[in-house]
Image (cartoon, rainbow over all chains, first blue to last red; front, side, top):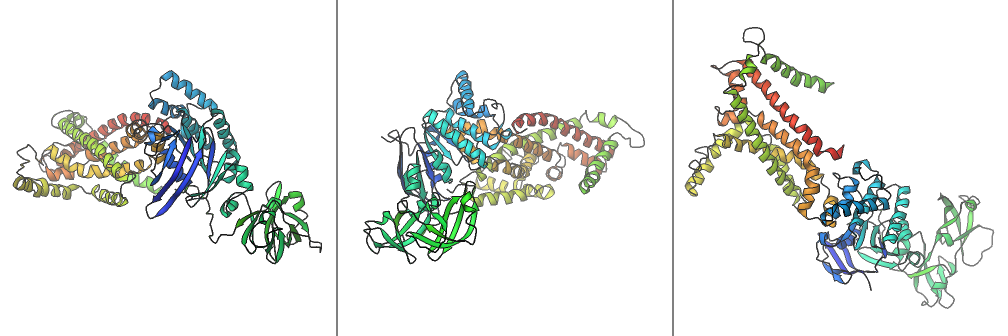
Length: 370
Length: 270
């Protein structure tokens, strides 16, 4: 049975901006779900509805079988970590962590014991007497996490808690968040626009777009089997080839005058317009040698982007506009300007109906869209 | 450098001149008589009158101004109210002196528009209830006209600095609105509130023309100074300078109270 349920949540803001358009989520106790999406997709709005800072126009929020849709935020027993700057500046780290316990009239002994435990848990046992402005951004977010956990919340809510931190601290802290979440077995709802972050620490990922959940599932499934063009584009990098099914039996499709075989196209109707999705790491590049093997496109390397262990190559040619990730060592043998052939996978390609509806992935600003 | 020259010319040199003049005789040489006189009637009463009036108008202006500013700036209040209040406050905080005195006399004086309206239309005779614009209460009321807007202008940036995240985090941790203000909001604002109130105190303590315009015989130290500087009968500029020197001392004492309070209130920001 689901522990946290979001049932048909809808929210429209002034001016007709539809922030949430009927989202459905079911999360088991102790599970970690990330709401992932670009700016303005409604992920923060959903989190704020769960926290009680805003009310849905329609739909229900249910925790452990109880409808809490109209319960005040102070009565929901939710712990929330905000993007940044949410620590009370007039209190030390320890006093911040103690705040919720003080409000709950816990005894002094119990309070100080719990505060000590939690500061140790987040690795700040030594910094309890420091004020927020004396702590780094990462330390502040650890204190905010300890503060949210102090009240033993039914659900932990995290609203892009790492977005204001530098890359190294982000990776370190996201691993700690996951470790603590697993250690305490706390049901967690995490909002982020960073797909790598979401895939790395979640049990489930829900990709949101225009107020709707496009797809929800385990990280590996989201990456390998995107259900919509948007998810395919948003999670990881994807080559998108528009094609027409020419032989549904063999899975043969036509793309830009080239015949390709794609297993996933089998069983479709002849003449169907489809989108063939291919991950860059599954494309194999080789210098052109005059032959024309099956399932290959020809083109010229026009750009190389060094990404560390791999290098991303952009290949453009008649019918080809591809990116391919190859080992950095191999990339050295495929310089810019070289004519190459790109062998496309038969089995690893994914096929979707070609939708007329386009989409845009907005640049994610510092602030979450609401 | 220009700022230093400015403060030297318009602050330190006049202050030094007052300080030296306070200890000078009418003829020549130096004396402590002028300063000694301050501790006796009527000057000591005038100081006390000024201090009381300043404390009351600073406290009232501070507290009421804080609430008005918060009400106008809080989330959910239409934006135009904020704009209108800030513009009005900017004008009203600088509206003082004889024009303000005249405005109050025309409104709340014995034959003021409001006084007559209340008497004739609502049968409320404010004079019969003990109100006189020429009393300290009346002068205090006029002072509030500029004290309130000044508080609003000074405290608005601090109120803007109270982050929404703090309120939400506090609610999320189970605190009521009252608990938020008790444990977070007021302590965070306290250094600014104290600073604003000391400013309001100084503003009222140094005010002259408004009080003079309403009642030139009011028992306030600034009116005494004016009389001794320009009066035909009471002309005694050195005694006036001693009284001004006494004002420095009063303000200095206020700062002595304010600084440790402010330091304590802002210890978390160090």
